[in-house]
Amino acid sequence: MSGKNAAVTAFRYPYVIGWTGEAEKHRLIWVPRPLGSVRLSYVDSRPGDYELGVLRLRQNGRRAGRPDFTTVNTRRQWRCMTRSWCQVCAGSAVEAETGRIWWLLSSDQGDAGDGYTNAPPTCRACIPEAISQCSHLRRHAAVFTVGACVPFGVRGDVFLPGLPPVVPLAVNRVVRFDDAELPHCVARELLMRVVDVREETAIDC
Image (cartoon, rainbow, N blue to C red):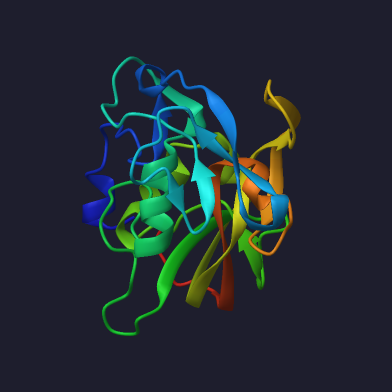
C-alpha cells in the first residue's frame, strides 16, 4: 500500500449517504397534464422539484442526525451522477489525463460490463478507502473506468394515478425515462447507463 493510502485511518462519512435528520414530510397530489393524463406534484410545489421530467424525493441537505448507510441523499446522489463527482469526497472522479471516469461497483450484482447502475462514481484516490471500510466491497469490489455515462432512469416509488388520495403502487421500482410510469413516480436515485467500460487492475487497494 502506498504511503498516501496507508495514512488513511479516520473514517469519513461518504458525501452521498443519507442522514436521519434530512427527511422531510410532504404531501402529494395529482395535477393535470395534456390529453387528460396526470402527474405527481407536491402540494406546496417548489422550483427544482422536478429534474429530467421526474418528481424527486424531498430532503434537506443538512446532514443532521445519524448517518444512514441504507439510504442516499437524493440530490447529492444526483449531483454525483450528473457531474461525475466522487460519492465519497465529492471531488471529480474524472481521470485528468484520459477523461475516463473511475467507478467502483460490486461484482456480485451484475454491474460489470455495459449496463446501468445506481452507484455514483468513486475517484481513484478514494477507491482504496471505500474498499477497506466496507466489508461487502472487500469481498466483491470491481474497479472500472468508463468512457461515458448517460441517464437511464430512476429508482423510486410509483403511485396509482387517479383521484385522491394518492395511493402507492410499488416501492423502490426501476423506472426508465421512456416509461409511461415516470409521471407517477417519486425518484429516490438516478440511474446511469455506463458505456465503454474497462476493468482496471493496476490500482493499489
